[in-house]
Figure 1 (cartoon, rainbow, N blue to C red):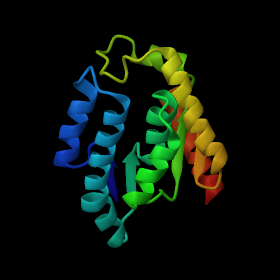
Figure 2 (figure 1 turned 90 degrees about the vertical axis):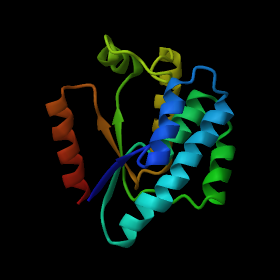
Figure 3 (figure 1 turned 60 degrees about the vertical axis):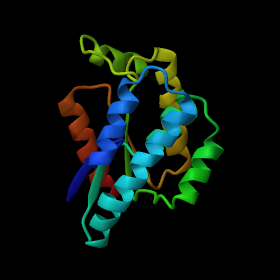
Figure 4 (figure 1 turned 180 degrees about the horizontal axis):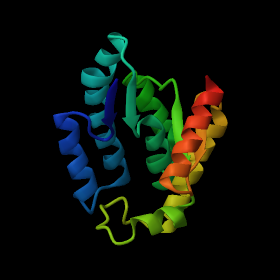
Amino acid sequence: MVVTREPGGTDVGERIRDLLLAHASLHAQTELLLIFAARIQHVRTVIAPALALGKTVVCDRYLDATYAYQGYGRRLETSLIDALTRLLDIPLPDLTLLFDVPAAVAMKRRAGRTADRIEAEDETFFDRVREGYRQRAQGDPERFLVIPASGSVADVGQAVDAALAARW
C-alpha cells in the first residue's frame, strides 16, 4: 500500500504545497494551476507506477478536493478543472471517502493552531467547499462513501469500518 497526499507526495509537490499554503496573494487561477502542476508530478511518478505494480494507493485529498476548494470555494469554473483533468489525463479514484463535517465544527477543531493560508479562510468559504464535496458525492454515489465526521475519532473510525464493510 502507498499512502500519500496532495498537494505534495513528491519533492516537487511538497515545494509547491509550501508555496500554496504560505503565499498570501495567490490568484485563484494561479492556485489551481500550481495544484495541477503538483498533481501531474504526483500521478506520473508516484500514483501511476504504484497502480501499475498492483498496489493500493491511499491519497489524502485528490481531484475532488480541487473541485471543492478551487471550484466551489474559490468560485472558479469547474469546466476549467474538467479541461485540465482531461488534458493531463488525470485518473479518477476508484473510491473516495468523504469525511463530512459542518464548517463550524471543523473550524472549532482547528482553534488554537496556526492556520495556513487556506485554513485562514472564513466559514462561508468552507461552507462552499463542503457543498462542493457533497455535490461531487451526489453526482457519483458509486465512487463516494460519505462518512459523518462530527463525532469523536473513534466514532468516525467506526463509521469508516461500517461503510467499507457495507461496500464489500
